[in-house]
Image 1 (tube, one colour):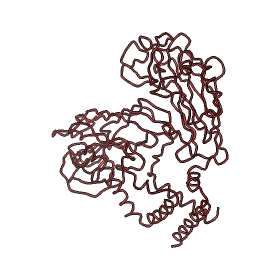
Image 2: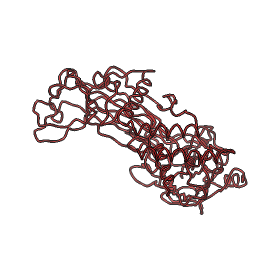
Image 3: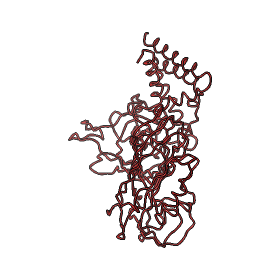
Image 4: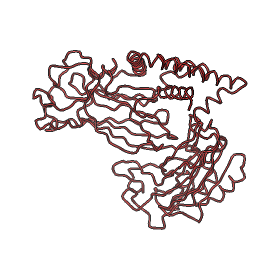
Length: 533
């Protein structure tokens, strides 16, 4: 690699890396997911929590946000903003429009802090960004309103939460709004809190996280401190960064532990995935070239406690049918009525009509595939190889679970293209049961019997009806019944251009070559100048 190309590559890395947090907050997951988040205080007057206060122990309102990677509400090792300080010292969580102002102000404070401590690096980034933005796109990222960075802000009702209180909220996440930050003050205290910062709902395998419970430990906002660590609001102003509180051998502290043991968690955060929609909201594709994938359907429906009321009368899947198609086609969609062809799969496991419908659509369908044989076993696997490109970038597929009235699993309009103009990597999608809305029995049972209905397609949920096969006494959500493994085998010509491919397209026209040369020379010379000084 030449000196100029090395400089160009290095600066491009800096430009794009500057928009990311230190930890990996990125998300390659397609679709969206809905979660129930439950804060639970576990702070009690027991041996685990000595020196329990007598003057109204409680939590302040629990405030949090679902946001994009562009937002950092608070972070260990960083200074608390004035708004985080307000929560930590006084338990104040502002409401309505002030919620957005809080996070906007935090962003500005973070920017000022970066400039103050990294002047030289920031000046290099500013110049590189100016060149990039002038040549390629307007200043929309800098001027984007905060509502495009925050999907939802929530605050528990009332003025406080009891030491063992619970507060639940339902949130939606996707690949743009994939992070959770939340906090609450423990009171009385100078500035102590528990919470989570930039919790990523996406996995590195391009899926969504499953059900989990997180222990929440006390941290200090670094803004106030007393002579000793006590459950009191009093203290002197300090200027420390946020840090986790630890046990101590100072017997005057409420965190004194004679045996040197660590502090226990004071609260928990329960995260329960309620549903997952793996249809892509954005079906467009700016990717160049093509890609080849291996798709594997895998049934995971077994006779176990996870799947009670397992049927004894020949449990199986129907043939697995799918298609690689263009955005002009929708095979099925939640909230829409099932076509007669989808109804045929859902009620009888008959893929023939849907195959006959899709195969002649050569302008909209690149490939139709159907697993061999009449059915698949409950834990069977079926693998097929497919090619995708800019024009045929979506996958839709389904199979009936049998016996059932009209229940299926599948995917609808999964986009193989990324917004960065590349192709998605390896991923595994959980497949949940949905109802075609065409037939229903008196109760939800593993049976073919039922009366005709006229409902739209909807995801099946757990119920408190003990006569249903989806009955869950503890109210937990239904597990996935199958998985779809997507493995990238190869990239065709230009298939890995990604973001650079988008830059190239954005500068299309007679002046593209001149602009590219100018862009490269300017960045290379800036890099050379900065490294020589």
